[in-house]
Length: 108
Image 1 (tube, rainbow, N blue to C red):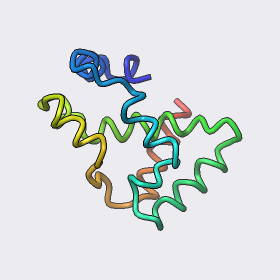
Image 2 (image 1 turned 45 degrees about the vertical axis):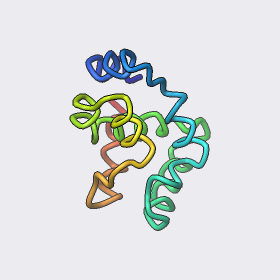
Image 3 (image 1 turned 30 degrees about the horizontal axis):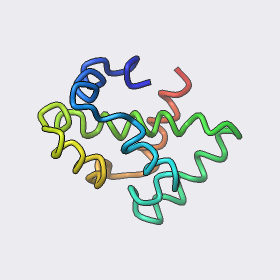
């Protein structure tokens, strides 16, 4: 999906040999449980499971997280990018607004 939504970032990550499996498995394995504070994780999980059994919203949250640190990733070296991806900075003020944005993008 990154290739479709942000080809420039996709090429940069590909050139650095940073595959989605390297960071994405960590994010998805616990459904973003390490990337968000627990209160926010519960809101996120409510949205994920309410959206449907296929968990399609996961992909949009994934893309949104990359988009939120896009500029840092594009300027970063391999090690800097891995640092951002393994310890994502908090990139939202309101988890409800963040989830709504992801849901709206999914429905487009």
